[in-house]
Image 1 (cartoon, rainbow, N blue to C red):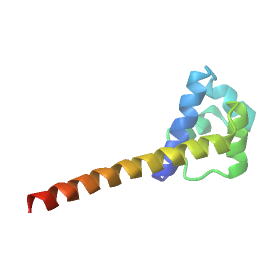
Image 2: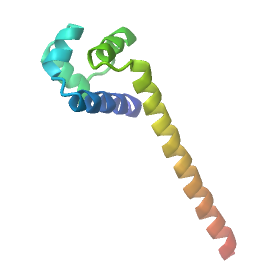
Image 3: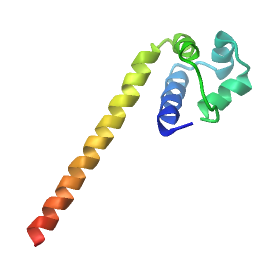
Image 4: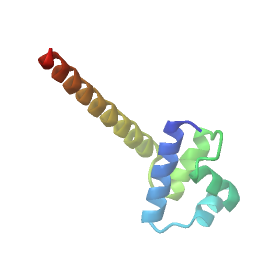
Length: 97
């Protein structure tokens, strides 16, 4: 799974744990074994369809769109921070010349 997928599964796991929802319960709600759901949360799943993500969102009581938007915003903030640091580094180099 790519970086974005790992971030999504990490956020889903964090929400599930904070809400004290067991993996077994989520797995049952979406029609998976606990082993498969555990693989999903650990990022060892190669792909997942949107309808399954929506069911996971229902099971953890958070719309999956909200999870996806959160992850995308976090990525954008990280990229912006990197750009600001790069600009600062370039400015320092220019001042030294």
